[in-house]
Structure formats: C-alpha cells, structure tokens
Amino acid sequence: MTKTFRRRFLQTALAIVTASTMPVFAQNPIPIRVANPAGDDDPIGIAAARFAERIGELAGDAVQVRVFSRSVLGNENAALEGTMAGNIDVDIVSNSVLRGVVPELAVLDVPYGLSSTDHAWRVLDGEVGKILAEKVQSKGLRLAGWAYAGSRCLMTKETEVRTPDDMKGMKLRVPNNPTYASIAEAWGTIPTTVGWPETYLALSQGVVDGIETAPGPSFDQKHYEVAKNLIKTDHLLYFHIWVISEKAWQSWPESVQNAVFTAAQEAALYNRELRIEQEKGVYDEFASKGVTIIDPDRAQFAARLTELQNSIDPALLSLLEQVRAAN
Image (cartoon, rainbow, N blue to C red; front, side, top):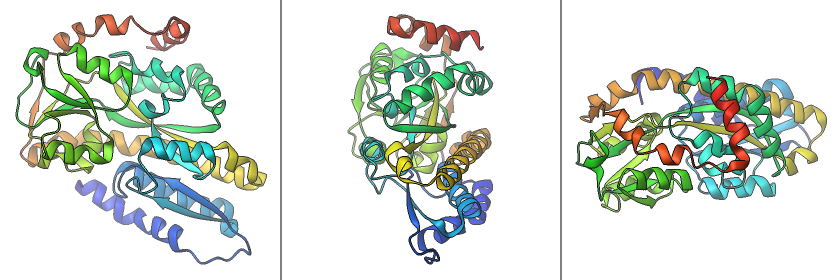
C-alpha cells in the first residue's frame, strides 16, 4: 500500500467496520450486501467504504450495509451471478466479466480503442454509456457508475519483454474473456485463464509465466513478490462497473432505491479518482519492490493486433464508431 493510500485507508476503514457491525436501530433494517473483489485498502475497497458511509447519511438506520472484500462471496463470475439472482445487492465487477452476459461491452475491449481516460469518460458518460447501461439493465442489473481500473500491462516472472517476439510460447494468464485470449494468441503466447484471486498462486507455482493485468490491482495483490518485470503495453483501459441487483431494487422502497443509487454513483466517481491517483505513483512503488519497469515497442504490439481490432461483431460497428468519434 502506498503512503497516500495508507492514509486514505485509515481515514475510511472505519466506515466498513461501522457498516459491518452497526447496531440495529430500525425495527427491520434492509440489508445491503456489497461484493468487493479487491482488498479494503485498494481504491475499490476505499470507495466501498465511502459508499457505506454515504448510505448512512442518506438512509440512516433504514439500511444495514455490509461490504464483503477480497471475493469472499465468490469470484467475480459467482458474485455477478449472485447479484443477478438477488442474493447480492451491489456488485463491483470488471467489464471483462460483465461482458460475459452483456456482449455489447466488447466495444470497450478493442485493443488501443480508447486513447486516454478523458476519451473513456466522454464515451462512458455520454450516449454510448447510456446505451450500454440499457443493455446491462436488460440483464437484471442497474448500472450506477463506471470506475477506472487502470491501463492494462503485462507482468512476467523472469523474461524481460520488449517486443511480442520475446513472449513466444509463454503461458500468459488472462481473464475469462475471449478478447484477452485473442490478444495473448496474437502476441504468440499461450492464453491461460486464471481467476483473479488465484493469480498470485498461479505465478508462484509456475502455472503461468506471466500475466495480463493492471498495475494498481496487481500491486494490491503483491504480485511484485512473484513477478519481477512489468511491461507497459497500455493495450486496453480497464473498468470496474458498479451495478445494483434489479431483484433487490424492486424489493426496496423508493427512498432506499434513491439512497443506494446515489451512493453508488458517487462511490464510482470517487473510485475513478482514487485509481487515477494511485496509477500516477504505482510504477515507482513497483520499482521500489525490485520490479523492472519496461517501456516496450508499443507499435510492434499494436501491429500484431490489427486483425483483432477489425474483427468486432458487425452488429456493434455503429457503437464502435461512436466510441471512435468521441476521441
């Protein structure tokens, strides 16, 4: 944890403790279960603490919030299923996982398709974001906000990678997402699907030689202990999406609906700010842990992905054009 995030964590951790153990003042407080895939000191966890605190301000003792961190309610796929089923009320889910049920999110997975976070916010806070939110809602989820999870990179156990040729034959951990597997194949690696909570173990045991990841979450997971090179390919921007269970939503009175949605919206924006702040210093933090930071030849990495960039589902071309037009 960086010094900045240690301070923020200490300032906000009390909210999670309070939310998890608060006395029941209302006769029948509504339980709000939040699935957090990261640690309490990660930007997601800090934003989740802010969410719990804000709910208390907006809804008082009408609700009882509990934040379940580090995937204790199941991995991201299981948590998403639980949210759609109404067993989890609020889920913070990566776009690569949510894409499994909302295929339109593939427009965010076009390699080098988003040039910057400013470009991303023009897309996600604009018309494209509204269209995607409607698609998400059709699957039993209300999209409350888009949070930044980082610019994607690679980490390797031993090999210093500067061009795709340096990766040939390497077993590369990727999320359970077809685009990520295709990227790995285009770079000459063997894509190996590993769940996020199991990634550290997969590296340490040699199940994989490297991982496709984002710097902030990998630092939080202490991947620097088992991977000694970080390669700044910046091939994708990654997002965490704050979603609310539609089944839970329909069971709440309007006052609680408004409180949960408002608090989730604000928490997602706060999550953005925290991750961007973290990313500014995270490479120095990795270096302080003995990790070699490599600026590769990105043009060579991009050149291997040309075919993939042009292979999106024809039904999504109009949406992709809107993404590109926002640049």
